[in-house]
Length: 529
Image (cartoon, rainbow, N blue to C red; front, side, top):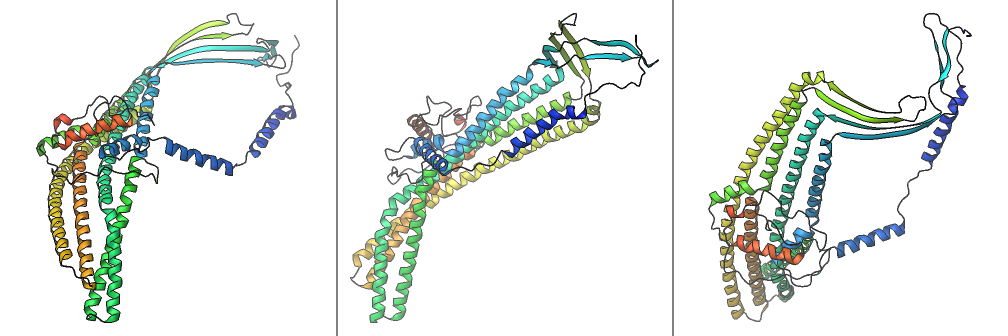
């Protein structure tokens, strides 16, 4: 055997040869990076996008073919309002998160494989540490081309425990998201009720303002003619002019306010801007909302039904499971591993084999930091308890405030109705006594304006009373739909809303109105049906 000195140089590829592939790869990556430039949207793409958006906005809803009732307005808001659709998507994402977290409970199963190839033999030799001489001729033990494959199964007891509580937390988060959606729906329905009755007032009274405005402008012109001709004392004429201008300004402000009511209602119903529609105009109501349920029962129902309290209850469970997770991290982790392996190397005696093992590990730092993590988790749990108590007190306060506001709204409506009747009688008297003079026209315009304002005040008082009733619904946590509906068509939803409204408007909505704790309302609403 030929001996070589221990310090004999070993043949290595030159730096130029070794660096060539790296330089080539770097140049390719650099050129590829330089070739990427921002590409703004073209005019045609913007035109197509705008057209597709308008088509989606107009085609996603059922067209308005008849007059819209309050029940249909609520049903349209539930089905088409985009804020509700976003809340619905949040719940869908939370439900998907539950499906994903379940896979974390299973063992990890990994399949791995690969092929390797060389341009020459993987030969090696050895040198003696004692003598510095070569102790073995250069030899090979690996094929130039070989393939490997393995199937590995591993399972961590600690990861399983943490994943179990994580899956429970994701489930509670999904349920909390459903309660958030309930809260969003109740808020939207409350806004729809208020906007609907404001829009009804606009349709009933809005068309009657224009003739009065025309009379007021003509009366102002006549009064100015009287001033020029000096037919009356100047102070009286100026007072008439001031009164007439105040009336014109008041009527124009009323017109502007009423014009927005239907636009706001259309937005809540999800209608495209500018969509024409007419409302069902109910006759003057004879029966006023009256609560036949005791305030104590309403408070009890609110503590059961309110989505905010239910959401907070789920958050408390999440905080409790966080304590459990922090406690598990104090224990050692036992990992179980096993697998099947294959190697095509022809020099191996056994090309296929199975392996298995156990591994015990303990994060010692977890013992030092565990007390802090446990303290943090327990503090968060205690915070959830205090937040639940504070929220419960706020809910009880809201119920009592809504109860009092409804009583006050009833009183204001009765007073507005009485004032409306008096203004009507005054108008009739002035109309009967009117003389064909500028002064008579001013009095008639003033009486007409006072009458229309009184009618609008009465209509708005009724809208406020309905809004107060809706606030009481929300404070108690009553859903606008039953626990389940046969399908999600607009006709079915409208009928379901009508059923709930008739039952609630009877004034009896106590414990029998409690929502199911099993399935949240409307798990899925198709975009159009």
